[in-house]
Length: 106
Image 1 (cartoon, rainbow, N blue to C red):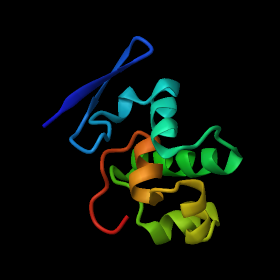
Image 2: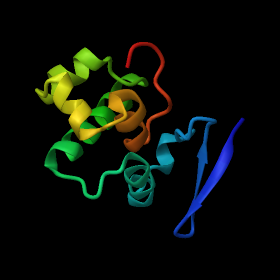
Image 3: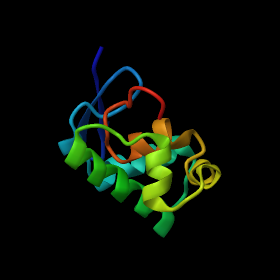
Image 4: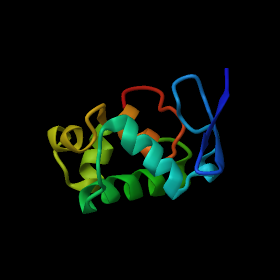
């Protein structure tokens, strides 16, 4: 069941878990929404790198990378990715990057 989130005059169509249904709706406002959900006050360069890698991988492959692949591409240990995104690479990082809810083992 889809729903719409309104924020700063923008509308975002999300699934029942709050993931964007359309990657093309990703904006700075979307980042702000998910940062609040995640309890992240500001994005550092490491957050931005994870988000960029996720988005780039998604554009090329149409899916989110598996956790091991994300770790390899960013050169961050999995533990560090969880430190950056408290709810994890799938729920936190993929959601923040505007990707649809990952399937499988992310």
